[in-house]
Image (tube, rainbow, N blue to C red; front, side, top):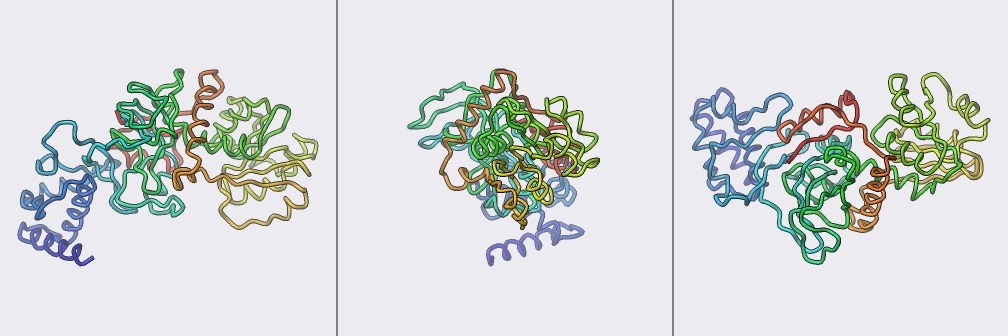
Length: 415
C-alpha cells in the first residue's frame, strides 16, 4: 500500500509538471495502465513510461478508451515489449474489478505437465464473465490482475509432458479458465489442462464451438448427471431460449424426452424451432400449464436456468414422488415445502467446481466429447449473436450480454 501511494504521488507530480488539467485523475489512469503492463511480467523500471509522456494530449489519448474498446498499452513505449519475436501475446487484462480491461502484451505461457498450449481462435462470453469483471461473482474466486474468459476454441500448438490424446494441429474446445487463479481465454494463447478439452466438432466453426462449453457442461450436469433423463419423460426447461436453456432443450430432445420450455412471447418461436413445446409464462400460471401439458401430474424433470421465483415455481411443477428439480441458479433462500409435499427431489449444479478445485476435470472433458458427438450428429448447435467482436472490443461484447440485446451467444474473435 505504501509503495502504491508513493507511486501515485510521484505520478501526480510529474503530471502537474507536464501541465495536465487534472493531474491527480490523469495519474490514476496512468497507474492503471502501469498495472496492466505489470501483469505482462515486464516491470516498468523507475516508471519511465511517464518520462515519454510529458504531452498532456498524448497522455490523454493513450489512457482513454474509445466507447466499447479496451484501453490500449501504446506502442510509444518500446521498453514494455520483449525484443525477441514470439515471446509475448496480446490479451485483455482486468487490473481491478469494475474497471475497463487493458489490452496489453503478456508473456506467452509456458506449457507444464498435463497441459497443452492452445492458439485461441474464439472466446465465448457468458453472463458470468461480465459479473466477474464487475466484481459481482465472489463464488468465482477470481484473483487479480487476470485474463478473463471461461470458454475457448482453438488449435493445439504444443503438447506438454504426460499428455496423451492430443497433438499439434488438433482443433479443440472447452471451458478452461477465467476463474480462481486459472488464466482465461481472452488471449492469443492459453496453457490449458488437457483434461478439460475435447476435439472440436467437425461440423461447427470455431465461433460456434466457443459458444458451447459452459452452457453445455451446465445443462449436461443438470439433465444427464443429476436428473438422469431418458426417453419417455416429460422434461420442462425454464428459460428455454437462453444460453443454458437452448442447449438444455437440445440435450433433452436427444435423450428421447418430450420437451417443454418456458419463454417470453418474443422468444417462443426460438423454443419451438428447437423442437420444444413452447409455454408462454406470461399467459399461464404454473397450475394452468401443468394441467394442460401433464394432466395435473407434473413434469418428470424440471430444469431451472433462471433462478429466483422460477425455482419456487419449479417445486410446484414437478411430478409427485418420482419428479426431480435441478437448478443452475439455486443460490437464494427458498421454501422446500412444496417439493417435500410432493415427495420429489432436488439437485443443484455448480459448474465451476472442477476449475476451482482441480477435482473432476476429466469429467468436463468427457462432457465436451459427448457434446461434440451430438453436434456432429446434427443434434446440437448453438444460437450465435451475428455481431463480431475482437480483443479490442471486449467492453462492447460484455455490454451486449449485460444489456440483454444479444440474439444468441456472444463470441469474441481472437485468432
